[in-house]
Image (cartoon, rainbow, N blue to C red; front, side, top):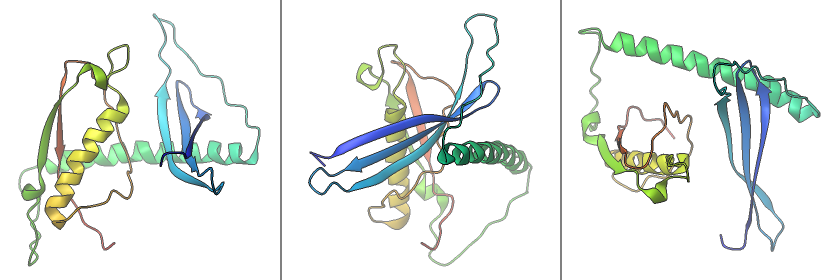
Length: 192
């Protein structure tokens, strides 16, 4: 809300050979009550790119506190999970390409997944990009959330509320003039 103080804190949790994990924590503080709440926590992976042919090897992070040690240990676990996820994803994609290797699940009142499919095409314009012409990651995430929200609303036939985001992957850059295609589909539901 207007009048609240938003604080964004970042730090490198762990440096690997050429990549690093950066932790991001967003808090909001109400100036009238002095109450501070955590709004969001995220972990980003950055890769050091050398200029020219030289190779960059990152220096280790100096751990100063108990929290630093904990985040350092958790970073390797998050990396292991992320890499494991990518392998599982690859395996599932290979399996799904095999003919006749699927099953249909029919339940009374079920909504077919194709009815939840939403596609949106967005043109990257100058206000969506930084001074280098690269699209803001936050703008891409906003477009993703919009398409996902429409898809979810087709299933629940009401206004869904975003509760959490597990993973955003940016596979490559986009620039002013690009047309970005967003596809969303509900692929699972949970009890809560």
